Image (tube, rainbow, N blue to C red):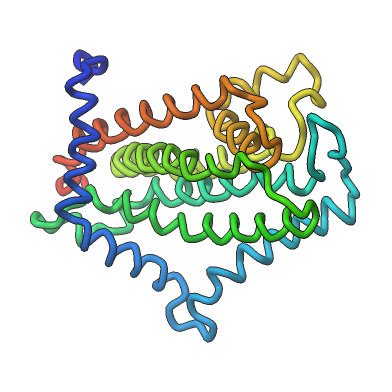
Length: 279
């Protein structure tokens, strides 16, 4: 695999195979994704309605804590056009969805042992449905953000038109991460614990709650080392700044998303042949 890591044909083949999975298994992916969404709330009184309530409650909590309790202030300047809550939510929303995918991916294959052991079941659809189900939450979050910005600012930044492009690259990144972690998690059962530790720390080393300029220069490189920071900066440009304040972040995020997809998929394809024996 290492010898062909930089082979254009091998890397392009990963995208072709993903397209073929959607083309040939589209109906199965749709049904699995729908079941993933509805099974979360099976047997509950309000059912799938909670998929709307959870993001709403989280959004209101952050607005209350940072907008009213701490009364964090920013905005009103050319380079900081909106209030602090809008800044925070612009980075928080993609991170919460990315975090959801990360937390589930390491045990994804282990949680579906019964179907994985079935020779005829296409296990490559499992990471895909894992990601697509998370997009429902992200869509609800974005709607809530739009409503909040319209209420507080009476207009949306024109850069909102680039959000679908960012979501597309985010999907590639999340599918790649899901392929990578789910395949490694079969062999390394401790992976889920490493992921949980990372998730506990990562939120505080991402440019979500603060501006990079507001932290000491000596620890600022931590933000640039963290690849997820570039996704956050790109979303903040589109949802908050209304301009390309971090043009290099768009390049790093878009190219990095494609790289992590190719790498994750190829690792998954390499390791999946032994899943049945290990499980």
